[in-house]
Image (cartoon, rainbow, N blue to C red):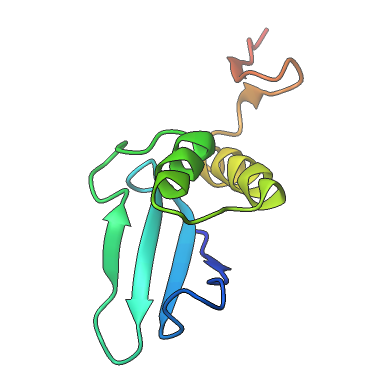
Length: 104
């Protein structure tokens, strides 16, 4: 599972940390709010496959006034590919899409 802190703007809540990442077990991107001294509150990506793309997560959060930098969106895309295919050694990614490798 990847986890990245998004710094809040100075005018936003200074005691809240916004965490985004990819959960390969649930196959979803997620966003957590961490308040000092309180349990983590997941606000996106609670259910399996709820947020299937990094761009969708960025759009959801942008609607709430939270900006994910473009480089982080790109990194999240790569992490989902890397973390999701660890147990799939027989895939060929050269075309940009996963294709089964034919043996023989």
